[in-house]
Length: 330
Image (cartoon, rainbow, N blue to C red; front, top):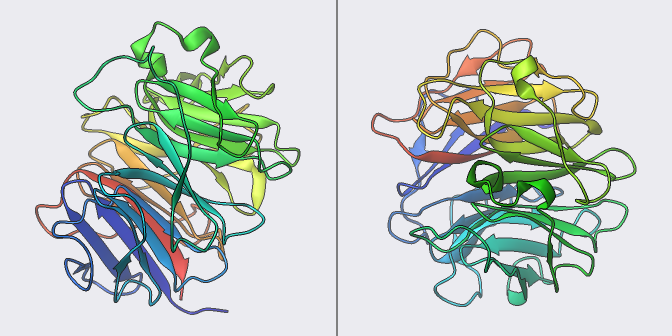
């Protein structure tokens, strides 16, 4: 078994950090092929090859084949800002990304080159100072042609043909910006029939592939429920993690976990104090007892024993707008 754990943390403010779990200091990865001030909005570690890491940036997708020592820009049209990365559940050589501008790109050659797969019609979305962003992508394990997208102030969408065409599935979300402001999406259950999305109100679940949505009422289990992300455990499709806070810029954050597909939740972050909203979750696919989360204000916390104990990994002074985290064995 691997004896080393690497943590990667990205900041929209223009930083990418890396450290080994047992070391004290973070390395600020500002060179070796990355763009100046890399805005690492999404980080994805290859599920079968932990030496290969992808990040989504303001200049598309970058890849490292040596755990982040060196990076190269992948072949993607200029001007694409990448906010989410997803591997095909059965074939990690097939990958998808979601962009600012509600476009979905696909790679069939392990990230070397990317082609536009489809676009989501967001003509009815709330108009913001930025184009609608796809903050999350998810696929059903049993039928990867069926995909889901979570869009910032655009709601949820479903594709039944591998991302070529999309249907907005907002149901009761329509007309309410708090509900349409979605930050993450995940698919759970052994039958891939539970879809979760996170928004300003909390976490919602659909058991009919987006036909209708149920508010899972996080306020029953936590005083903070604003959610910046949701993720299903890689080893158990019934276990769901959710980032929470009071609001976008709050001074309190945390993480919730459900072991029954969202019927009940518990605070997972025992004994630590998150002083801003939690923005990212990272679970080690090879050692799923290792879970990390990051806060917008720059804190990083990790557990190596499924939440029984936690350790804080302070980022360098001045780290801010921290939004993504990934963890892998090496």
